[in-house]
Image (cartoon, rainbow, N blue to C red; front, side, top):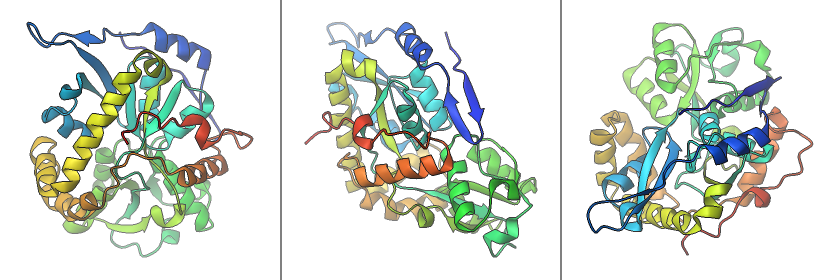
Length: 333
């Protein structure tokens, strides 16, 4: 049974309400976690992982049996962004997950999750894609733009760029067009003049001629870690060896993908239905450069906390440090 979690907007900050209630929900919405794989087979532990549908390492690892060989039945809880990933964990609908900066916001706010590792490309990957006629960010003032949903990393990226350029959120007409796919459609149909989206969409927009990458968020965030893998505190306490097994399987998966980028790209195109030309253009260079260690960039994470405080997504008075919300003990050596 799906349970909802109340989220409240305060200014431009999302606050997840009643952390005690969320903890109760997380403990009271427990799914059966042992499943038999057949007669005489050793039962596998079900692990529910919250992520987007196109997560390459997770889907490849499942398809090729990396997680199964660690005794894990990995089940994807498909979500559209980091806020939904944190909400799923708080409501007891996910045991682990991997997304962007809302994970930091949730962990600092007291949602019972712990960051356990980094994905292989953990930096800031959002871009601002405008219609082709725009030559500068300033030209978008007063125009309808789609920076994404409240609390998501996309709107954080837009606000950081805007501030660096001397603008405020109120200088633009914010249109929440929804997912990256919907935002792309809004740009193509003229509903908005610009969107914050992924690099792959930026490549697609330029190749097909309906948009141009006007700004890259990475140019404004500096030394910054954006994406993380987390586990709920209850799952860590109850099944620490499963957490260790998950990260072992994940490491083997990303190591294999890094060593075989052509196979990785082919899998993404055929099995995850990614657009062939833009995906190859972007990931043929990115995958071989992956950092597969899983280690947290603590300097980059502290800087992320500072930026999120400055944006108001985290209470500016918070004294929580990166080391207080991270536990690297399960990462393979």
